Amino acid sequence: DIQMTQSPSSLSASVGDRVTITCQASQDISNNLNWYQQKPGKAPKLLINDASNLETGVPSRFSGSGSGTDFSFTISSLQPEDIATYYCQQYANLPITFGQGTRLEIK
Amino acid sequence: QVQLQESGPGLVKPSETLSLTCTVSAVSISSYYWSWIRQPPGKGLEYIGYIYYSGSINYNPSLKSRVTISVDTSKNQFSLKLTSVTAADTAVYFCARYSRWFDPWGQGALVTVSS
Image 1 (cartoon, chains in turn red, blue):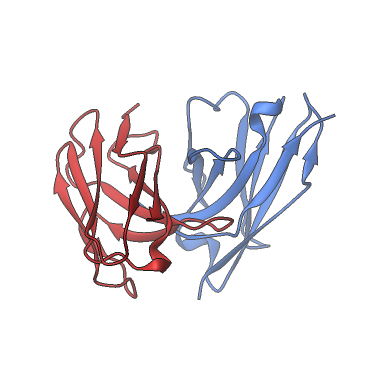
Image 2 (cartoon, rainbow over the protein chains, first blue to last red):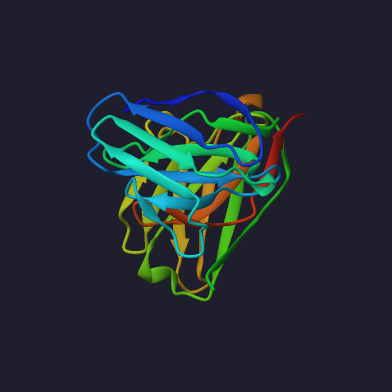
């Protein structure tokens, strides 16, 4: 199985801050990586597919980049409604695997 | 828009079989792949498996010996069965459409394994 390691596991930041989460794959997955946002008690929501493609309707302050084994997810200016847990997910190899999640809090 | 809704018992006894159904609306179930993902309380997401209406199926090897996913095109539904459950199978179970990514998702169904 491909292991997906997210960093950090939790993060506290202030409104307006630039926030970056990283996701490292245990082997080359090209750009076969997606990012999700999950708010408490809700289902995950797809934000970015294929490493860098922003889903329709998702605010432009969210972005993704990377290829191979190293990926990043950035919120350019943190908003209160961005409080959530964020997950990366690879589909390059079966079984599909997720990162362990990054919990984002407001300072 | 496409919507998914999980249904099934919220409480299952240890060693018994967990059964859930996902009802899909606004799109034919024959047009896409459909999947199950679970999330134990306070933990991360675990892929269970996916199915295509024609019978193409993939299961997570960690659960493969206990999992069956099936599709009912006449009802526009797909289902999950997990046998010989233990407390470790207590989780919120999500159904989702799969096309390299999971979108959209159902709201999730909490299944507790307890006697």
